[in-house]
Image 1 (spheres, rainbow, N blue to C red):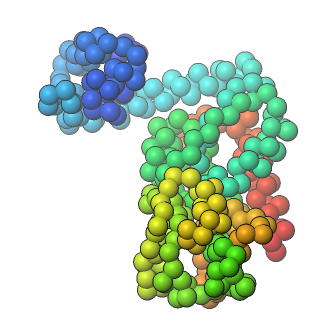
Image 2 (cartoon, rainbow, N blue to C red; image 1 turned 135 degrees about the vertical axis):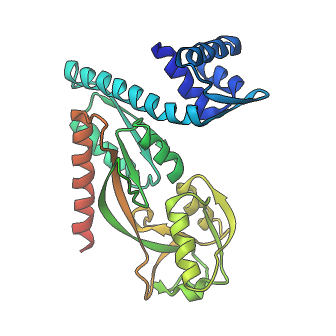
Image 3 (tube, helix red, strand yellow; image 1 turned 45 degrees about the horizontal axis):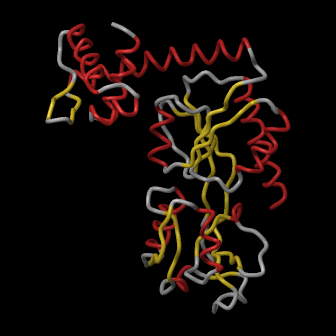
Length: 295
């Protein structure tokens, strides 16, 4: 059994499509198919049920996938550990986030401490982020909501109040606070379902007796303030994403503990480099400072 066979198997198992998997691996479809076939011959069992060009993992494949992922995970951790030991001042920090409002400030502070460490950040839905986390492909995730799991280390770093953003000229713009009941007939702009804050907002509003009506649902939380300024709708925005503006008023929500929890997540078995440990320290210090300022 060869390492290349395992790498190809994982890609096909995740995509369940030979043509797409071959394209993503930059190999020919026939080469990929032959590699998978040799792996199945080595194992003595078929790993997929074949339906045209699509493949579907069978019971043998699902069981072998768990083992193959674990084996490649450990090899990748060993590679990262050796890289960290041989060149601790360089390397790449892999990050995934579902909330990015505080990330620029955090990365600015981290760069002061580790100027030669590069970082790669992905903005993902909660489901996409958890998949990367389980596969051990990221050092840390900054997530709201928190995610629990046997292989997930979850540390709550901040409790973030949710505010209501309304444009100047709105009927509520001269207020400092508003109840959820007063918002039942409003039109909202927001992110798509699957993002933590959106799922939290929908759940809290349903508990208050209404379902928010959205005129816009997107993938970029930072765009919501621009849409509010354009008077397309109002928005629920975390306090960490609010800012002083001549065009928007941010209102507190009355009589409701409407907050989101921000958590720092990591895989319990992933090797944590020295740079990653420094990143965690920066995150904890940053949110600790914010907490003191709001007390």
